Length: 335
Image 1: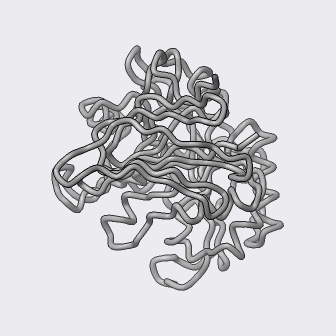
Image 2: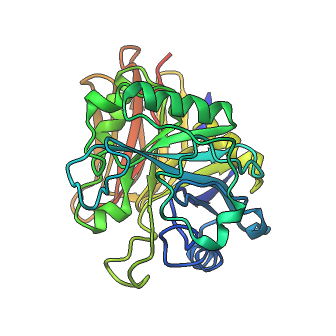
């Protein structure tokens, strides 16, 4: 028996994409922590633009701040994506495996125009880095970040105007962001499960996340708020930095905009999932073979069992609730 998501461990709710007043967000990190804790979150990655800071002073027994940042690589480095709407850009999140690793990899002052002057003296980097928008240039950035002790996720590909001819050339990614709540509330269809499948079918060992990318430009109770819309649930024994990062590295988490996954077990040719009430639980693969358990009208389902075939290459399971929200497991290789 292979336990993929373990009901005997804890599930910690995490937002892995967030901006504070240290870049272009409207709330301080302390305010963000308070608001997310109110809503049951245990973890926030403060991915402020272009620089990494040590945020461990925010940690307590119920909350963990992941040391992280978001960087951009643009076709035209000095052009604004808000002005040049057709320009391609790659956005990457760096997550530090060591909470005190706050030397920003691949730092470029050309891009760091969002920084708060109050934290400028805290920014640490080894040297200016010349970023190149090309698969070669982006792969060098990913590799440099990994050698510097970070794992790297690929953000909002639809907003970035990128497609399979771009992202299938990127190597060494930890994860791909398949839902971005900020994009969604601003009218961009950011549901990118097809990007995840593209990568898995190309043989890339990558995980999926759902994130907010919140900047807090609207009231938190507004339908236009870009917070609290996408998250991951990290399956770990305790809320400790190295334990949480190890769970992320091993793919021991799922992504959601609503539904809960309680457990996921593989027993030989069978895979069994238990969930919150759902209207559909679906089994997808690396090929055309698939299956789904659909609830009858007015009813729900919360447990499904599927058969794994040796030709599936990989499988992943999605859960849809009555509100149209989704949860996604990782893609699991069929061995």
